[in-house]
Amino acid sequence: MSYRKKHYPPKPERMEQQTLLPDLEYSNPGVERSIYTGKLTSGLPYQRPVDEKAVDQLIQDWDERLLDPLTVSFRDGKFFVVDGQHRIAAMRKMNHGREVMVSCKVYSGLTYEQEADLCYKLDKAKKRLSLSQSTNALAESGTDAEIVEIRRLIEESGLHWGLNKSRSGRGKHGEIQATRAVINAYRLLGGPGFSRLLYLLRAAWNGEPRSLNAVILSGLALFLKTYETEVNDHTLIKRLQTIEPEEIIRRGKMDFSTSSTALRYARVILEKYNGQRGGRKLPYRFKG
Image (cartoon, rainbow, N blue to C red; front, side, top):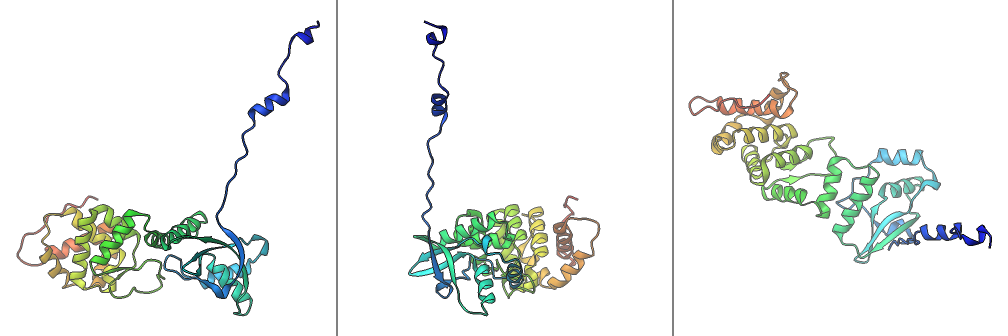
């Protein structure tokens, strides 16, 4: 018997079989179908508003090969557009305002909240959402406990969190359009402290739009955090009522000694609180 016959090295084919992974299968419950745009409902509260400039840019860069199916939810007998309303607007515009047939991926069995969550995740993956738009989608989905709590406290105060709206002008009476400042104030003060801030704002200026400006929110939050138990709420309300929000904003802008926006406006509020004759003055305790 030869040496070759005495030894049986493993066959390459057998080794390859040992290292193969089993085939993986991924399933997607969505069903692709063509739907007339006249049967599609869009503009739901969790969606970002249609931007005409974005629509015109989409038309300018239009390439049929790059189009994905619209994401659609079939709920309560209607087709709701979760993702793709800008594409619909572009196709209608290119078709002289007439409806068109579009390719859709249709999901059944989603709740409104699940649609909002899917919209948020799709837009986040494509990096299309602003902070206010993503916060609005999270609020509508109910999946983020912090955002849900913030909106609940704002509504309980008699104000409204105007997320997902144009920042081209002033908000409506009683409407807070700030997003980052609101979230930061909540995180700085906690729930009870944040509720106190909202109460003070509403009691002092009754929801005047400029009083709900991001800089005033930030300044008052820092002021309350610094002098939490020393501030008399009744006194603060009375003294804030004697100054227009616009004046606080103007005076804060004139402070070039710090780069901290919150500190600039907290100083104005402290000065106003201490400005009246009589009463106990608060010492300067801000850092920076």
